[in-house]
Length: 152
Image 1: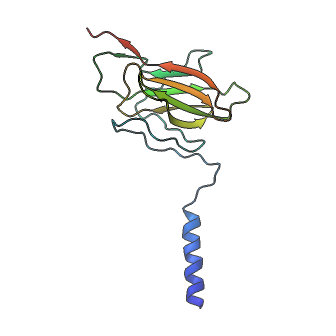
Image 2 (image 1 turned 180 degrees about the vertical axis):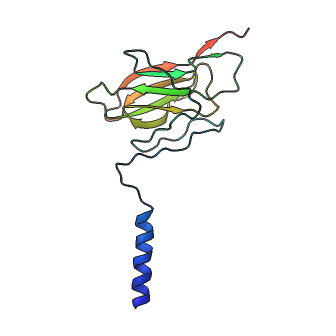
């Protein structure tokens, strides 16, 4: 009986040791596949850019993408960094970043704090749009699109 009690206590200790508090944000790995956007993460999850391609948001801009333009002949895709800042909006605590292509259905790309940035995988291309929504009510609060520039 004593062995069972010790085993149970050890198992419980190991299980609790691996847990993080619910308020501690996690950082998922960036999607580096060419298969499309990552599934929605939990509230507070954002991915820090690894390449230093942070989109500098102009004053008053809610969402931006870097690179903002890609050559139309580069259909194979590239990594882009999406940045957003809705922290000045009083009712926005958690946001959802949605994405869509010209002919595709919008999909949740990421969920996170009111201010942050994240990288796409190597699937971003001209015409991909990103929409920032208030997670609390689903209202769109900003959008941006990767512009197409002619190939030279």
